[in-house]
Image 1 (cartoon, rainbow, N blue to C red):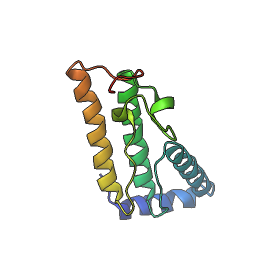
Image 2: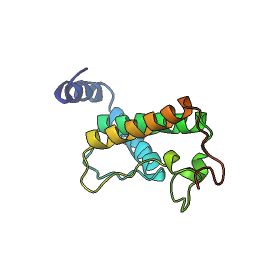
Image 3: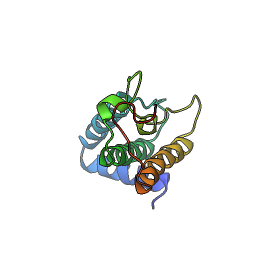
Image 4: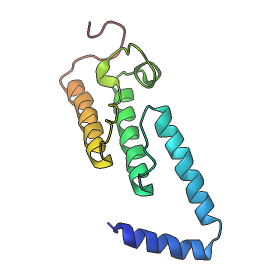
Length: 130
């Protein structure tokens, strides 16, 4: 996997060839940040493009696992005050938590959803864990 310097050098070369590339990259970054924030993910603004992409991938894996096991993303994510199943709620990023640490917690949460499904325990639905 290329390191950050190689990626920057690559992007600089590509921007020289296509003057609109930078604008397109910034637009995609802004759209991705807006999507993450709509899911309740706190973005500080210090994250690299690569970290933003990694966060998006991790959130998508979590949401796919929740959906595959009966979770209702509309009820269990975002501003829901009382989710159907707390296991289906994306972990919140802590104050000064690094992206790497947060990615680890999202991956752990994704694995917990998967493991519970493997054990045959139900999920979702009102009163599932009350």
